[in-house]
Image (cartoon, rainbow, N blue to C red; front, side, top):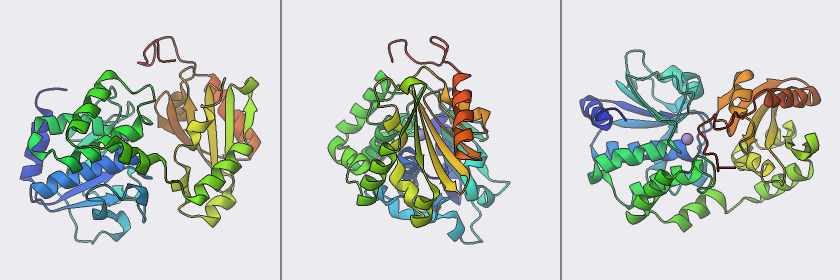
Length: 337
Ligand SMILES: [Mn+2]
């Protein structure tokens, strides 16, 4: 990281009178945790701030994080809220902010902290490091720089983001530095058992039932190398916040023996599919998703498509097969398969 970039972040915060903390639509564990980290920091500094999400209801499974109750939806912000500083976390493009984007004043200063390779560098300060597993792993660097802000809650928050984005230290983005960051957080009071339980277990009955339905409907293509999972629109009609129950489902596809790619098609509106793509490393699903205007990483990506189901699946499979991973071509370690 160039120079004292966290020092510049701290200077910008100290100069500011009103701050917005923002993150991407359908905020996940890393996004929520990174926002909570800044919530704690700004509280400690006595700053006026608001923590903003696109969605009206945040995912309550992150309710154990200190400061979670400070989240509010962009739709509920008072009209007079006019931040001079906006801290945007885990968000590669402005478009991914959803309805929050419209609440960011044109003349505000932006701090952009992210680990997505596709980050567009839209900040006055950009801290973008695709080598990092998660935005929270980047923020461990900040709390090492300012250890006076470290405590048990802070450690728990940052461990949550790392644990979430690495799938419990399982994905290829888990490097030795990730474990060093995690060890530092455990030394400072993060409890791996409690955090894993909150993030990955304690399933709702709805989740258990829907997982059963999705898996029993699974479709195997290309001799099982591509696993297609599907969830029809009636689920979303009956459970408007049901997408929160679907976290991790796309990873199940690539858990199958012989699977190289999983495609999870969620019919969010009739004939409109939000697709999650996962790869074991042979195919670059990030590039396949970009082909349809989406994005992500080589191993995990998302996009949206409209059309009839079967032709949509064919289109997706053709796109995946256009982007084999060149040997050592995606920053993956050669032994990561
Ligand atoms: Mn992330």
